[in-house]
Length: 355
Image 1: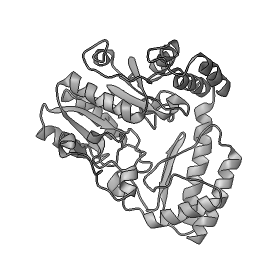
Image 2: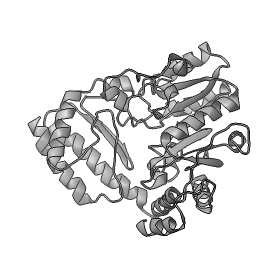
Image 3: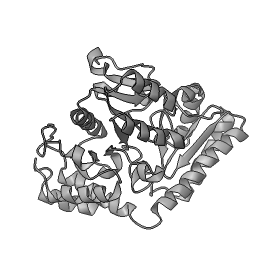
């Protein structure tokens, strides 16, 4: 990775125009992600979601969107409604500085509650542009979808002429090489990506069906652009990362070490007398200080956040840094070893007994 970045750096950091590396990474993303037939690179997950929202509205001619309580889609004004994660940790219902008009077309439902989504469609016939969600919630903690939930959303959006959008900034290339949509076998109309596809450098992307993506300028009338988008350094890092993920046994390894970690944490917590639940999919995991099960942000909010804070501090004092919020999923990587997992579980057992 570092050697490839140094070589790319010699040729220039940014050209303000498409480059061959952008085309190469685009082809890799299109080959990997079931829903993506065309893709546009940007500089962050937030930018990807901003472009996706404008595109969904341009394609459908509608303004309203449905998002889910606790799902985070970046810090753009339209999405900062019941957004979970940092907003929830800080005790803010929304963010100061967001005008009412920016969120008036954003409707919210409870994650895993298909009936509530049906009610919103019924009350807003012909007005919903898209249903946007994290296919596995990561910004309310690690919350997996019920099988019938994703299937139901796919059918509902088709029936109502709305688009289904998966925000795979977290889950893309993490749950499988083709993301959550490949893992669950549900293909959305549009997908947003970030994080992994930049290999540690700033990046984002949105893509989907060709007939929708062709609306994006310069192919179509929907304007979106960025001077640093698709820059050669981020594209190089992304290409090298995806090549590494293509190697045989990658996702089996992630599933193995993450399973040991997630199962070990829950077992250690229960052995110490705590109410705790949790789980994992491949390299993504989480746990809650509540008996569970946790299917939504409302369920997650039943967790003992003060106990989590004490646990987090105790782990930090033992050299283990976890996400600093009960409402954040955790991730493992190919750099983590079984020794790392064992060290973490040993520390966790000590902390669970002390809090």
